[in-house]
Image (cartoon, rainbow, N blue to C red; front, side):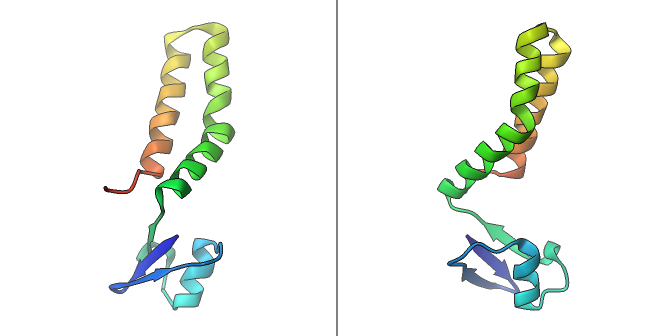
Length: 89
């Protein structure tokens, strides 16, 4: 993971929460830190989020086959993709 703060890029070698990074950098808030993930990290974050948040919605849609259930599942998948966008090539 890489973070950017005040024009500086810093590669992190160990896993830290964004809150820990903010404290280490002396940042006033987590919003002032830009987090840059590798493609592999994005895939891992998405997989974890899909399992925790969207898989049950998918199963509900498969069970009842309603358009509302399908839309809830698809909306959650899009939300996860927006939260963890793939890095620019």
